[in-house]
Length: 388
Ligand code: V1P
Ligand code: CA
Ligand code: ZN
Image (cartoon, rainbow, N blue to C red; front, side, top):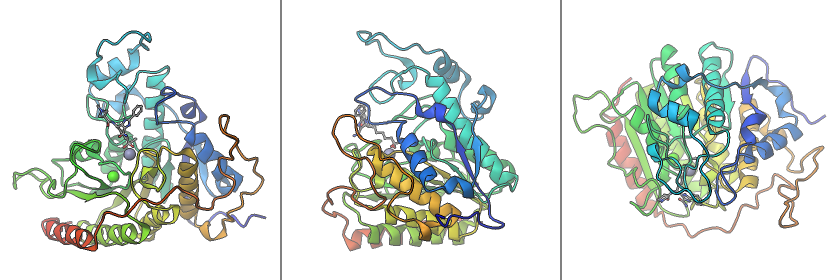
């Protein structure tokens, strides 16, 4: 008995498809779809699937993807051929470079993770789930007709468009270490979606180079989207204490002013300490506290993945967050039950012997208390312009 039981009168839906995990961006590329295999293995070792409705996700149709993406871009994505190693001719739509390579099965990959987010959103709309989870989604940089930062199709925008069919207002929260620019841009002129991204910001020195505090929406006051984009630009090394305080304070104020009818939380795990691309010092505990806080609001909640480039830490975080969703986090023993440890092929290391945090060397915290309180003050002032 691992103590995991199905919560009564509370439904969590989990949208997965092992097809997605099989795609490869290339050996030196930091995005590893097999981190999803690791996450799923950890979730199932604990028996958490017993407490959720598990759905095999399907490909989104082109018609569904046209809700946001242009027809010509989708057509190119669907028919793009993997280039020969010596072919360096530039490709349209920002494809084919080092960030967004054209790999085998690219369209299958994009339509699969998009289908999972759309299905998850529909479970919330139909009251079939209180929380819906798609760890393969969260690809927040993709634009209407452009790939960007490892993202080709924007499953988050597609999911929010589904939610907007039923719910008047959607709050989008993005805890990936990068700015959620694609989602922000898609709803830039809307007052039905309030977007909030917390990220590292250092001008053009950190991808994608946008997301400063004063990026609050269209400058034209008559535009309904004015003030409806919130950005929290941070420096290296933020720790759990500061991060959790910021998250609860800002999200609390957003919910009070905006009264969202649904929440989408992008749980990019590259904000964790020890991430290959990230710079923060957030622990699995602090990352999970954001999920727990959103759950406590008792508003339909969609959880999606996102970045995360140290696979064992990604798996730890998303397994922990799954346990929070189903309400069994208190029962999770750090020693994984019935589990054959994965062994790295290169180094003879165990990828996740326990759920305990051994994330990586802490980085010096460059966020002063004054910086943190100035951010909160500025956003509090911005939110005076936001009404339900
Ligand atoms: O910095 C850049 C671009 C490439 N230069 C022209 C500027 N790209 C970043 C992209 C990061 C994408 C993050 C995606 C997400 O938010 C959502 C899934 O997590 C980049 C970086 C970096 N350190 O920022 N690309 C790469 N590293 C890279 C490294 C090796 C191979 C391919 C890409
Ligand atoms: Ca973010
Ligand atoms: Zn990221």
